Structure formats: C-alpha cells, structure tokens
Length: 120
Image (cartoon, rainbow, N blue to C red; front, side):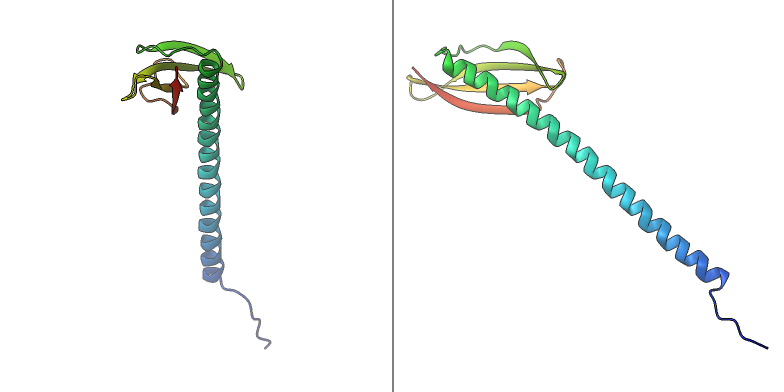
C-alpha cells in the first residue's frame, strides 16, 4: 500500500482562516489610509483658502477690523466658507489676523485656522 502525503481537511481550513484574517487586515488598513488621505486633502484645501484670505488682506493693506467678516470661495470644485477678524495686540501698530475656514456653512469646528500679524 502506497502512503499518500498531503494536507488534511483541518489543516486546509486553518490555512484558509489565516489567509482570510490577513486579507481582512489588509482591506481595513487600506480603507483607513484612504479615509486619512481624504481628510488630509480637505485640510490642505482649507489651508490654501485661509492663505488666500490672508494674502488678500496683506496685499490690499486693509487694516483688519475687530468683527468677523464672512465669505465663501470656490476651490477644487467645492465651496469653502471663510471668516476673518482682527485681534488687538499689545502693540497698537500691530494687529493679529485670524482666519477660519469651514467645509460646511454651519460647521461647528473649522477645518483650518491660521493667524498672521498685520502692521499699519
């Protein structure tokens, strides 16, 4: 009688279970990376919108007021909602300029917040 060497059904099932768990782990990791990439892209665009507002104020030599000024901007096929205001500093010839950008008009938290300083 010849002896056949091979894998038993139990060994095959254990190997399949190991490969299935490894596959699920890979899929979960890729999904998390894609989600993180989308979040990073959104933050990058929001930061660019905030940069645009700061540059506009600096180039127009506009002295920032102490109340919020709201607006919106189209970038990357989306509408971004920004607001900026001046903040008093210890030196009267300087004023801080805070810019906030939201992806939704009524969003509670901004996607990007930047501060710069403007001189008279």
